[in-house]
Image (cartoon, rainbow, N blue to C red; front, side):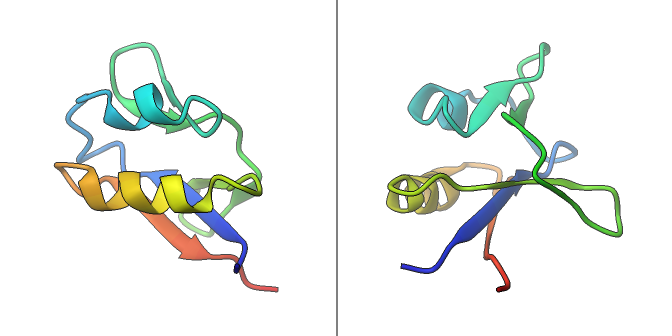
Length: 80
């Protein structure tokens, strides 16, 4: 399976708690209900923090991406 990276669009997050309730190894509450990634592995040119998805959690992260009611979970394949 391809390595994945993920981030949260905090401008559209509705604080539904789905992602950090389901995968606390990847997502967390930043303190006000809005989700964030647990750690920042990559910063992109727009200053977004991406976390590399730990091995074995790829399917769960994809499921949360699909189920996020606001579409705020962003998942992309990690470029080698």
